[in-house]
Image 1 (cartoon, one colour):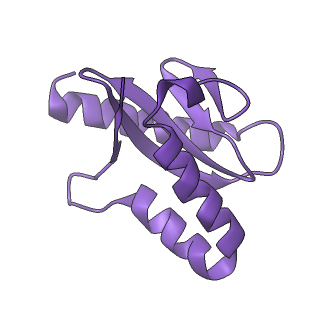
Image 2 (spheres, rainbow, N blue to C red):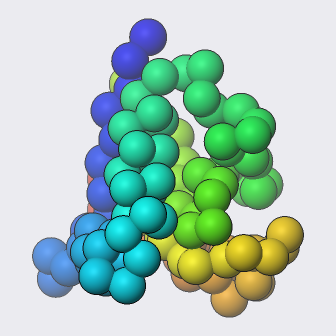
Length: 113
């Protein structure tokens, strides 16, 4: 089964998840390549578990590398990436989980899911 990976867009059409790797491209090309490759791997179910991904709770998951992308599943084999951070530590800061959770709620509210 193949999944479609979508990037969260704000009500005004901004795309913070797209902007995140664009900034990485200039500052850390290796992490940029890893994020793009990781997002591509999310299309395949076998990569939805450790070591590449980890469940964070409340429906959120993380794509794991020095750079993290937080995402969630939606109907019809879709994944929505909602937040990206630089995190070389083990734990994701609570404010980043809060940002991802708010975006997930916003997406679900606007898309009736």
